Image (cartoon, rainbow, N blue to C red; front, side, top):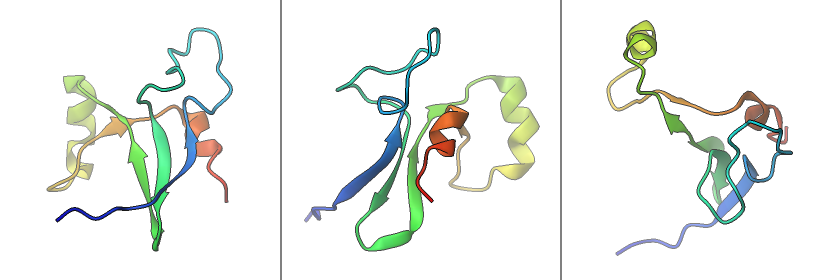
Amino acid sequence: MSRNLQITTLTTAAIAAPRAGDGMCETDRTCEGVHTLAGNAAEYYVITTDVTDPDVLAAFASRIGRGERLGTVQRRIIDEVPR
């Protein structure tokens, strides 16, 4: 049985002020973002864009553990997370 988890969006590319040429997502589309789940204040859930460049993946290989994957998000999205 699935649980009904409450997601709080802290910031997304759609919320961040767009800049020309950023390739920002549009409202009502999926996009990079930072979220929390009710009852779990210790973790952020981050929607990223998968890294597929083999050179970048090789550079990070020693830092990616079992069950982890490398993704990117525009820096300003992280900068806009409320602290």
